[in-house]
Amino acid sequence: MTQDLFNLEGRTALVTGSSRGLGNAIARGLAEAGASVVLNGVNRQACEAAARELASHGFSVRALPFDVTEEVSVTRAFEVLDGEGIAIDILVNNAGIQLRKPIVELAVSEWQRVIDTNLTSAFIVGREAARRMIPRKRGKVVNIGSLMSGLGRATVAPYTAAKGGIKLLTQAMAAEWAAHNIQANAIGPGYMLTDMNQALIDNPDFDGWVKGRTPSRRWGRPEELVGAAVFLSSEASNYVNGQIIYVDGGMSAVL
Ligand code: NDP
Image (cartoon, rainbow, N blue to C red; front, side, top):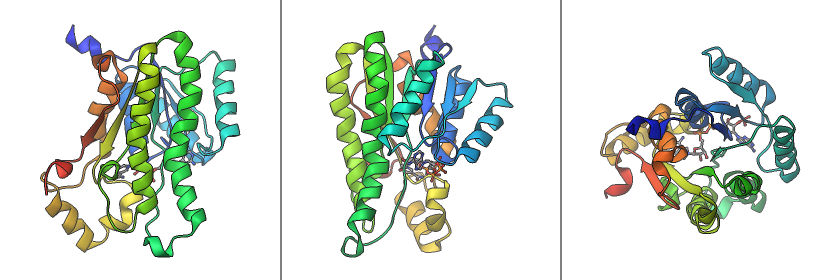
């Protein structure tokens, strides 16, 4: 049956940065498709509260707070999962931060923090996941890129460099892991209604620009990423590899 292609029962998904925002919506969507989900964030209380909330709907959920930028924390987290016999079938590299500043005012430490959180994290967590997927000959990696994976915009240089890097890291992962039956793809969300964008949502000029520039004439809702996330996490995408799917109301398609 075609719908079985999208069934995630029996799969376990780790979604980084899923205590809130897009990651939380994706984790919920994967759980609704049948997956057991491992929620993550830096803030332990927020991560555990998000896990309790999802579990209250009857889903199989575990909270695993760790900082995706710290190699030691990431390896320890995977060792905890190993110890509990939990194998990650689906990894969504979603954790990210934004920092808006002109390049000429940017400190190297600020540049580094954005690159570490949005790009290096996908390498570190992806490496740990793939080290375990390769022997099992199965796995799905979904990296969260952005419109900025292919386009620039003033004041977000490190974010743009990191998200451009995510697009090509995804291709590098596909190049190395496809032969092991691992599919690595990316999602490029447009302007979505989350905490990260609150300052922009509250700014009437920016809000007007987003609505005018997006063919759909509105911001995206976090749950609108679920379709692409389930597709790229499921057997429906077994011959899709190294691609980025933009979920952006058409913004990247037009001038
Ligand atoms: P939010 O700010 O709403 O949420 C970010 C999440 O990431 C939180 O759960 C946060 O946890 C977690 N996080 C941040 N730093 C770390 C870290 N070092 N280790 C582990 N977890 C961390 O962001 P969004 O939901 O808006 O964005 C999610 C992803 O989507 C990001 O990669 C972002 O770049 C991307 N994106 C977002 C768009 C948008 O319009 N919102 C558009 C395009 C891409 P905690 O609270 O504990 O820090």
